Image (cartoon, rainbow, N blue to C red; front, side, top):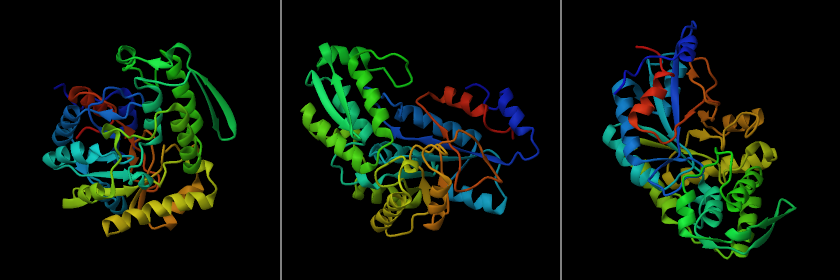
Length: 349
C-alpha cells in the first residue's frame, strides 16, 4: 500500500490553520455487487473490507455518538473517522454489518422508514427497474408528473434486449451522454420526481407501473430493510440506527407541517421498532438550502435529536454545528484508491 498520509496541497492548507481539531464522516449507501449502478450508490463487499482495513490501520474510528460527545467536550481524538449509511438497504445488514463486526468498527445507518413494509423498491431504483432493465415497454408512455404531462417516446428501444443491457450496464448519471432514449427518459423522470413529496412520487410511480406493464415486483437485490431486519441491525450495539424521514423527500420543498410529519414519524416509527430512543438524523439528499433549510434544522433540534448529518463534502471541525455535520461520499474503489482519498483529508499524526 502507498504511504497514506502524504497530504495534498488543499489538505495542507486546511490543516495549517490554527484549529486543526477536525474529523471525517464517511457516507456510504450500499455494500453489494450489482450488475448495474446508475446512481453510483454501491461499494462491493471486497472493497468495503479493504476500506475498513485502511481505517483500522491509519485512523481512529468512532461511532457518531462518540463523535458528538467528543465535540461537546472539546476532546476530539486525532484522525477521527465515522462511518454512516443512508437509506436502509437490506444489504447493510447482510453484507455491511458482518464486515463492520469483523473489523470492530461502529457505524450509523439512517433509515427511510416508509419503505420498511417492502412493498416496492426505493423510487430511484424503481425507475431503474422499469427503464434500464431488459424488458418490453409501450412505444409511447404518457405520464403526468406534478400536473405536467410527459410524453415518453421509446422508439426502437421499446424492447430492450439483454445484449443491449449488457452493453450499457456501466452507464451512470455522471456521464454526459445517454446511450438510448430509455436512459434519457430515466434521467429526466428522476429529475422531475426529485423535488416532489412522497405522496406525489408514490402516485406517479403507481401510474408508471400500470402503464409500463412492469407492475410492482421488487428485486431482492434492491430490497429495503423490513422491521425485523432493523431489529437485527441494532443487536449487539455496534450499529446505531438513525432516522432519514419516511419517504426520502426534498424537505425544503415541503411546508413546515409536512416536514415535521416526515421527520417525527420517522423517529417515532424507529423508536417503536427498536424500543429505545433514536438520537441521530440524516437530511435526505443533504445539501444545505437545496434539500433542507434553517427551519428544517430547527425542527430536528426541537424533536430531540442530538445531531444531524448533511452531504456537504467537508471535514467536521470542533466548532461546527452538530445539527449540520458534513460528510464525504464514498464510491466504489479498492483499498489503495480509498487510502489515496483519505490522505488528502486527514492530518498527519
